[in-house]
Image (tube, rainbow, N blue to C red):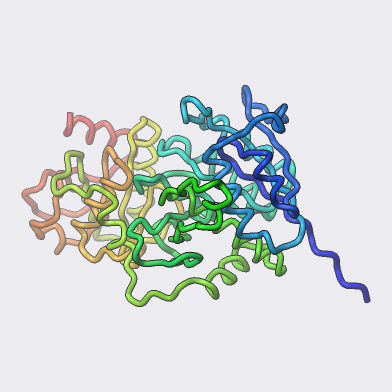
Length: 387
C-alpha cells in the first residue's frame, strides 16, 4: 500500500502585510499577497517592487523560521491594517475571516483584535464556522492584557508573551486549559535568528509576536497528522514547559491596572431556590447588553457565553477571594455593570462591595434590594436606582 501523501498546509497571516523579498528567502514558503479594500479581499499588486519593514513582516519571519525545516506550504498575507494610521476595522477583520472560510485555510495567525463587546457575537459565529471546517486560529491578546476578541473567543488559541522575561527561555511556552480565555498560552518572544534575518531589527516583547510562533508549532502538529483542536492541544501539552504552582493571576496582576475602588454598580444575586435563578439573571444581562451596557456576570455555574465568568474558572485562574474576582473582572473587561451570584454569608462580608441585591428571598440586609422579575422591567428599575 502506498503511503498517503501529506497535506500541503495553507496558512494565513492577518496583519499589515509582509515583505515579498523576506518571504522569498524561505524556499518552502509559497507566498501570495492580498489586502482588504471596501470589505473585499483583493490581490495586492506590485509586491515585488515594495520593501516592507512592517509588523506583518516580523510575524511572517517568526512563523517561517519556526517551520523552515518542514515541507513546502502555502502562506497568504491578508493586509487589513493601514500602514499610516495603524488601525483596522472590525469589518476588514470579518472580511479576512470570511475569505479564510471560503478558501479552506488550515491555520490563521492574527496579531490584533477588538475590545468592543458588541463585536463578539459575529466574530464567534465566523470562528465557529472556521473551526467546524477544521481551521485552527491563533490570536494575540491585547498588549494591555484586557479582554479582546478573537483571542478570548471559544476555540481560539489566545496567546500572550512572557512580559516578565524571566519565566521562559527561547522556544518555551506555557499552556493552561480551561483558563480565563478557555485556552491560555504564554510564549517566550525571543527570536535572535529572526532579528539577524531582519538586519538586526529588534523584535519587541509584545503579545502580537507570540501568535506566529505558536502558529508555527500548530503547523508542526498538523505536519504530524494532528488536525482537530483536541489533537493540537494534546500535541502542545506534551511540549509545554512544566511550571509548578504557576498562577496566571499573579502573572497578569502587574500587567493589568487593578483598582482598589470600583466606580460602577456591583449587583449581588442570591436565591433560596434550585439554581434556576441564573437563567433569569442571564436574560437580565442580555437585556442590559442589548441596551449597550458592557455587562458581565460572575456565577457559580459553568456557562459558555462571553459575558459570563464562573467562579470556579476564576479560582483555577488563581483568584481565591470574591472581592478580588470582582475587581479583576472590572479592570479586565472595562464593564459598565457587574452581576455577582453569591451566598448569604458573603453578603455579610464587608470586604465585598455590593451596591444592590437581587433576590427572591426575604433576607434582611442594609444593602438596597430588588425582587427578581422580568428582564426589561427589572433593567429599568436598576437603571433608575443608579441614575
